[in-house]
Length: 232
Image (cartoon, rainbow, N blue to C red; front, side, top):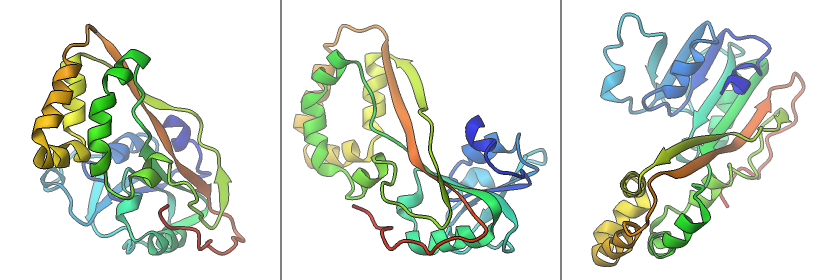
């Protein structure tokens, strides 16, 4: 995220769309004069904001930002773009960004596991594969094919890494939407698959999620937004 914070030519205002708990806004507030988190359904923790909070929270959609044109230096989202109406969001982000500003649509890629652990998870992954949302492939690809009116910036390799126990890993799996849906539809087989994971003789499992996505810099003479912005 430090790399991302250093991209804009100015660091006046950053806007996080679909912010949820506003973790990115909180981090970026150390690097920008003003961090604004936006979400159509802000969490309860957003209001009332603590007096010392470095982040301002605004209830609005990613397609209709209540900000002047050319007034923002970064528009960012994390694991959220697929919930937006993509083309209007891109147009709105382009409107509020100043020339040289950064548009970043980020997401978490596929979880990375040690080979022996992934082998033990085969049955579990096979079971939940049918319960993922249709857009999941687009998300873990890093929103492949997304086009923005500006200059593309290559995203460097980065990942969130953790060392967990087997029970912690099962807890991660249980938090997945596909696992929750599978729990409702076929709880028996799913519990059997999870039970087999408990047989792993691992005290510490290194797991990671690569950060994927698309990053662009708004240019002064942009070309039109491509009509390729649809989920595949």
